[in-house]
Image (cartoon, rainbow, N blue to C red):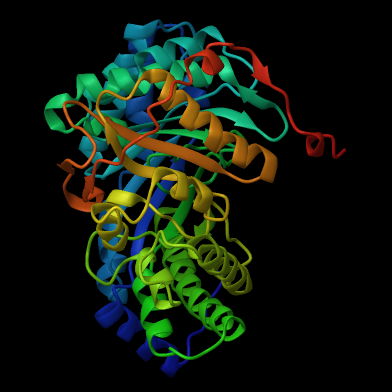
Length: 456
């Protein structure tokens, strides 16, 4: 393991960040290749997947707990990501894919981890039979498991947008919401639709072990909105250039702590170290909010005019500071704005200060996209698909990752409150535009890739 040297002042400062500013390691995620598990026999495939996952990650939770105790640095989640299941499921039919999801869930339960990601398909140019079966299985898979997370990549800058897949994902989200209606349609919180998905993301619901990754890898996701917020609150009169430098310094320190944990976990698990994802991932806890950082820059409340510019500054400074701290920054790395998981965003939604349109504008400059947004339960599937298409278009044109994780909560209407619990928080139902997008969505085919795709 490459040694990371910390001065006495840095150690004291890190302890203070943990004690007062809620610094934590949000996740240690072990990525695992499943290519050697392939079998035409679904029962054999499930057995091989269960055995490999529980063998490779057998010591994850114990190792993570030991590191947290030794370093005094909270590690909130332990997770596993696997090769996109559509690539290894062979000739499995829809029921077979559900059985694979159940095998993944059993493995997660045996390991005692929080989530397992990779119930995934990449369909940016078209769908294979396996892709079609996996997508058809998503609603049942998420309704019949507790820890399994699913993602579908429906577009990219190189390929354009697969509108047939986007239309299907609108229907899939609706069905998932219906099958988990008794629990606030919580299944949709475990499903994300990507454009330009990355292969080394340790955060759920979008984590999967990419085809360019090694046999196994340790990726770490760092949080720390509270660290940045406290620093900005102590600099109320500084201009934007000074604020950017201050955020870069905080991101540098957060990233160094994350790499120390990642490399230590790598050494003890005997698994190569991959990346640190230095995303500012908020929680519903007071003082652990990205929205409050934007408000500390001078906004009366997030969602007002200036919010997009403030978020752009924050996201850019976080990336620059992290890149200086480590040669292995990856994943999404920036600022997340999940509406139900950020107490400042929750408050803005409850007061009607932030709309779906403003959130979409902000996603053009943040790390991911429309995240953990509760919508009316009667939102048509075509409207959900159009929301996905809009967000994917932002990612396609700007050559960045964008994603949609929306929850049409069964039986709820705009203004109602839904409680998800834990890190998923709670949310006020945000209204959607009532005008129909059905004719647009139902045209089908592909929206062609932009000219910048021809960069070879």
